Structures are given as C-alpha cells and as structure tokens.
Image 1: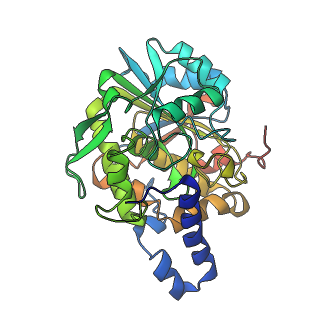
Image 2: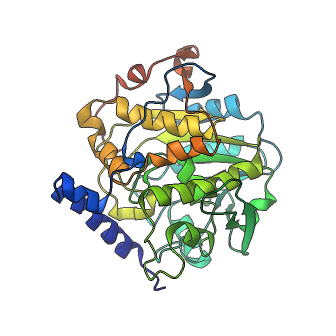
Image 3: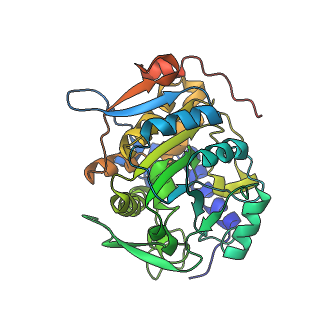
Length: 358
C-alpha cells in the first residue's frame, strides 16, 4: 500500500464532496449513497432515563475546571488527558493557555497522543514532538503513546473487529479524561469524543490502518461512510470499556471549522458560531447533545457543518454507539451558568453570535 500524504488525502476527500454538490439526486446515490448516517435522528424525546450533560456558554479555563470538578468522580491515579495537538500552526486547536491551567488543576496528569497514519507533521515520533513544541504544548509532558509500540484491547460485540491496536502506553494510565475540540471532519463528518478516542488512541501504524484501509487495498483511505463510522466507533468502544468508570468527557464547541485539526493550515474557514463547553460521563449523550446543538441553530449558522456531517454519513457514529450499548442518546442539558437549570437546545444557542477569529 502506497502511503498517502495529508494533502493527497484532503484532495481525494474534497473531490468526493464536490461530487455531491454537482450531482442531482440520482447522482448523489453514486457518491454518498443514502444511509442512516446521513439522516438526523431525533433521539431526546420519549420516556426513559436520561444522562446528564453539563453546559456552559463560557469557553475559558475557569469553566473547564468547574465542569471537570462536576464529573471527575471516577478520575484517579495517573491521568491521561487525550486531546488533539494538531498539525503545525493549526489555527483552530484548543487554546494552550486554557489547557495549561486545566492540566495544572488535575493531579498526576499529562497530555497523551498517538502518531498519525498519513504523511505530515505527526507521522513519526520525531516529527510529532517537533510539532507539539511548535504548537505550544510543551508546558507539560506529552506522551506519544505508540512511541514504544502497540497494545491490543478487546472489542466486545463488534461487527468489524474483535480487537483493536492502541498506543502501548495507554495501559500505563489509571484514568482517561477526553478533552475534545468538537468540529467537522473530512471523513467522519464531525469530530467529537468518539473520533478523539477511536482514531486518537489507535496506534499510527496498525490500529489506524485497521479503521481506514481495507486489507490489501492500495488506497489508504478507501473505507468511508457507515463502515468507517462503525470501525471508528468499535475502536472507541475498546478504549471506553478498558477504562470503565474511570473516564470522563468534554466537548469544546469553539472554532468549529468543517475541517479537522489534522488539516492544519489547510482547514476551511470557520463559519459556525461558537457555542460553549459540554461535559458528561456518557460518551453517547455528549456527542449527541453536541450534534443536536448544531442542528438547533438557525439555518445560516448550521448549514456548513450539517452538510459536512450528512454528506460523510457521520451521524452513524451516534446510532452505532447506541447499538453497541455505549451510552444513552437521551439526556438532560444542564446550564451551569444559571443554577444548574435544565434548558432546551434552542435556549442554549439562542444568543450565539457570528464567528469572529480571536
């Protein structure tokens, strides 16, 4: 299999997306065939228990710390903070000063990452460390978890896998705190918690290839749409099951380009308003709520990101997490800015303002 560069991957994925815009409805079936991953499912109505998703419109270190303190009941011992450190000079990655203050608040913690599959600024440990320093993440140790090889975690009840290869050093941690920049994704439609773990903990040689590439294929990125979402989610499930109750999740809905942080300076301009920070102990509930908040915006604000999610069939991430029993798609959205009051999606986004770069 010939290794594809990041530029080639983005070009190939972009060509497929252009095809959707250029074809009529009949042609769309030939590019991104209709499937459940392209259709928004309303999940939060009806009876049954609901998970708690905490929400604040304020995106800063104090709020992040407050949210962490509300969901850290299972966090103990040596703590891995999983986030995306980005390609060189990435314009939308999480603010380093915010993360620095947060990491200092979490005892015995450090950032964790894995090497990339594609050729770029992070496909070798040496290049990855240089990029980490360039992007300002050297305020604490950053563990490139596959630097010393891989470990194998079981995948329970998977369709595609019985095991997943992750960075070996993941096994050195007692707890995992998943700190995610929620945004679009060139292949996954959106990048939330599921993507941050499923791709981000898989090692850069075996695990990521298991998700992206059909064995024997000459196309490194030939797996897409529902199958890609399912493979990624099974990888995520392996990590979630490994940590059990010793895992917690945050989505930061800020600088939400349709592009992933893996696209670096090639990322599409941000047009979606910032929303806030969400926190939960339920992986499905927090990703479901984040997607629902995008759909709750007015058409002009949500169009770009919704189009990216639907054309890539990214919503399959949510329905497959539910099928695998990973969490609850019903939730209470709790506003910590107003006395922990339960609020509607519409109330949460009613005051969003057009995006303006900082």
